[in-house]
Image 1 (spheres, helix red, strand yellow):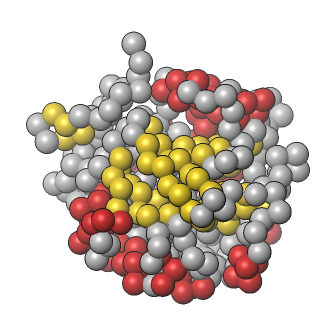
Image 2 (tube, rainbow, N blue to C red; image 1 turned 135 degrees about the horizontal axis):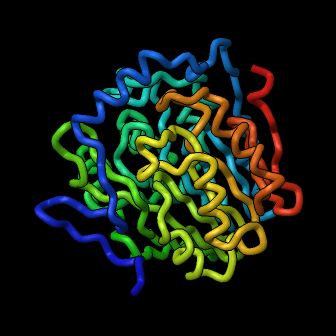
Length: 344
């Protein structure tokens, strides 16, 4: 029986695709002592950056047909076969309510929202504060760069976007396994939502009320998997089996801990999920995301990427490691390898 089914609500709440025990109030009694005793450099002791995005680069097409700009965490501008897709943008100072409370970002945005190129798609995977920057999204909707953009998101998150002023007719909310096809001149782009093992909500009383998901983006020549947030589950293998290949797979590696391993991958499980999807022979390059911008866990801020690098020799891994804010043409034979964090 397939694990890749459309999400359904039970008693008003979406369910995970695999049995997942979520932490309740009792978790606080386990986590608080760990935070009080934690001596890891979870926030950089030294200032990071500044990093700068040269917006003039966007005036020309990527010579390989695909270019990526990583703004830190899970925010990525993907240029793929004639389309520009901005994924999970967060320009806020902090990953919390009103963009102020919660963990503060380690470095300033690498460019102004106003300097972004015209966008074809704004993709929002789910409504957690470190993926759904309300002030960012509201401002984006007011800019000319998004006048022709399609906003693609998960079920229920469309209502949050509407409250920010995004017109209903420009939003497509997908259930798992659903696809939207977009046209842009002579170019075509398919975006498909797939299940992920996570949760949603922005407050104490709205967990599971909106959907979360991962996404496959297919241009005319390139195919990319955007894993967003997920714990490990057997569905990675089944998602990989739906396609003959990927050029790039984005998987989260940060904000991990054994106490919440059901909803976040971490480096080891990211490597395992990549292997399940087909490894480098089928999936090309692994792009680690969800790290390097916010302190969302107990580990040192560099630990996720350093641990992933330590797995590289023993695992079937080819890593895409860009410098924050630098638009980088995709070259599967020569993946970006900027070890920028080692200087801090």
